[in-house]
Amino acid sequence: MKKILILLTVVLAMLLTACGGSKEETKAATPETKEAPAKVLNVGIVFSTGGLGDKSFNDSAYRGLKKAEKELGIKIKYVEPASPSEDQQFLTEFAENNFDLVIGVGFLMRDSVEAVAKEHPAVKFAIIDDVVDATNVTSLVFAEDEGSFLVGALAAMMSKTNTVGFVGGMEVPLIKKFENGYIQGAKYINKDIKVLTLYTSGPNPFNDPVRGKESAIAENNQGADVIFHAAGGTGTGVIAGAKELGIYAIGVDSNQDGVAEGTVLTSMIKNVDEAVFSTIKDVQEGTFKSGTNRFGVANKGVGTTNYEFTRDIIGQEKIDKIEEIKAGITDGSIKLN
Image 1 (cartoon, helix red, strand yellow):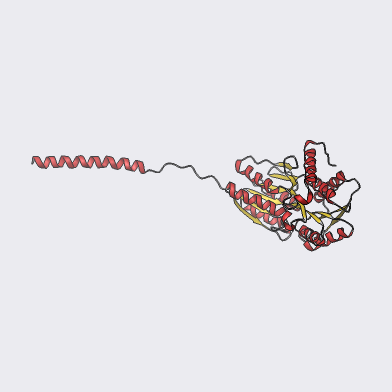
Image 2 (cartoon, rainbow, N blue to C red):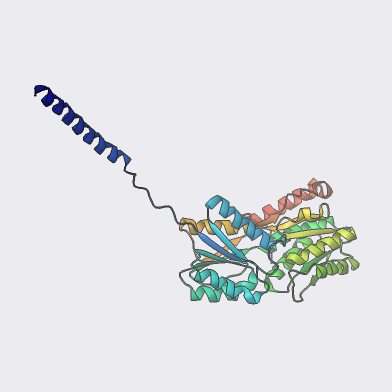
């Protein structure tokens, strides 16, 4: 009997120990409380007529979008309207699906962004190259005249005929800024230089390479040996024409120097990609503000490329002169009209 009591005592002690151990294990296995994952930003962008592949304005905006996707972890969606008549429809679809930021690319989208932003005050919008006065819209504009002044000066220094050309897409205030800056820059170097101007217009002013090439030929026939374009996809025709004619071209918006190496002296860069990226980052960080954000030479919103294929053709003396002009625009000693 004594042996049985001892045995029961040992078993009971083992059971109590096991129960105690089980309680501690259960406590240790309880998962720690975790914070809810941060909300992923959804950004929609409606590209300008001509869409991706223009090696210009739209492609630059897309680079900014992809950079934000990679570095900020956002989700993106984009559309390429066949015509401006579709802009408002696509902007509305993004807004109705509660995208955190909706971006309209190009001045042709101004009225559409204004209308949709008014209908969806809780959605944040951005427009590139025009201004919409609304509490939920940020307007990203560039000093195209300052950047064009730089390439106008370069064109004048490179011209052997004392005649340079400009090809624009549409004769509207925005493109006139390119033209006016280019003319002022050329005349800053040579007050007697002749500057020819053509606007392609037509049903697809920013996506008509054939008309672009015809414009380059027409200006060359009048003596132009350096031609700057501000015509989106139409400008690829300007560059192709310049290459065939054996003259120089100047690209726009994105780095187009490699489109025709040695033919494209430089490109008037508009850092649309950085403007898009910084706007998305502002939304993510809760610092989004309505109003107008201006990007010029001083804050590196516009400028030139680094002459990757033409540095030897241009020569260091002329490149140094362009840098001197940049400094003058920045400190205000060079003023544009």
